[in-house]
Amino acid sequence: MTREKATSLAAVIALMATGWCAWETHELQGRLDRISHGSRPPPAEGGSLTAQPTNVEERLKKLEAASPRLGEIMSAIQLHFAKLYFAAEARNWDLARFERGEIVEGLDTAAAIRPEEKGVNFAGVIDAFKQTQLAALKDSMDVKDRGLFREAYQESILVCNACHQSSGRPFIMISTPTNPPVGNQRWEPPP
Image (cartoon, rainbow, N blue to C red; front, side, top):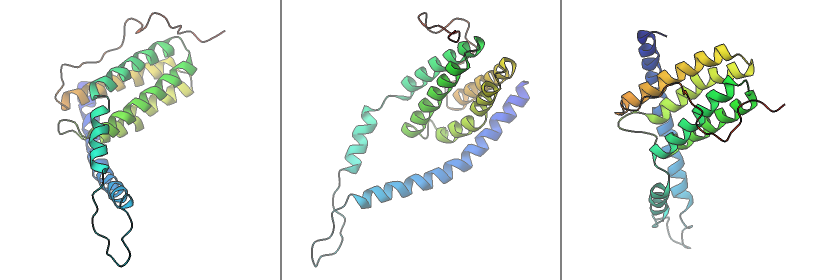
């Protein structure tokens, strides 16, 4: 894939993510409003419904403080991404599908914890990535085609690096792994 094609792909993803972000922000605000209204006690007899103090905001702050940081989540995703590569290279498609699922779960967690990162609609980028590159990886695994998998994997790396660049972390550059990420796992499918 040429640099121009990769840049164009990243721009298209960013545009899709921007539209998605506006919609998602609206939806999240609606959910927060429903939670806030649902946690208030009913009005006293003869009284009116007035804003009662709730602990939703306090609880949210505590949950955010206890949540893993984005770097921790992304490190776990990086591990699963490397394991996905070695599973597919060994044609262990069940393990590859499992690792892809772990990546999706990690990305969903990252988007929920940090929907925006350094001015980048992170949740939107993640959603677009899941619908394009991760979908292409899934398709290649469904047909058990290592060539298609390798192509989709390389495109995934390009998008990951474009996201790192746009979020102010150009020093994080992902590449195709050269060594297995763990020494105590078998990559080949069971006999």
